[in-house]
Length: 100
Image (tube, rainbow, N blue to C red):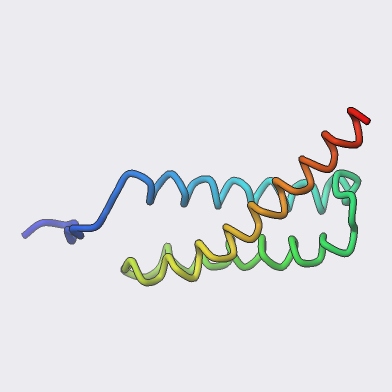
């Protein structure tokens, strides 16, 4: 009679990585749409980032409407990791160009 289905492998990292993925995709959309991709050094990558960000946000909206199972998060975390790698690379290139 509990409203939450317990899952034995749950850790605190699940909500942390979920929120980081959501905020990074929203931030990427903000930079791509409102800043006109001036942040990104390679504009060709911005199409990939836009697609990944939209996938993450649309999938989050889908997850709001269904009972969530851990297997659904795999479809969310893989694009989130790729998006995070792109963002870290872009920040590194910006920092490197400012120093040198």
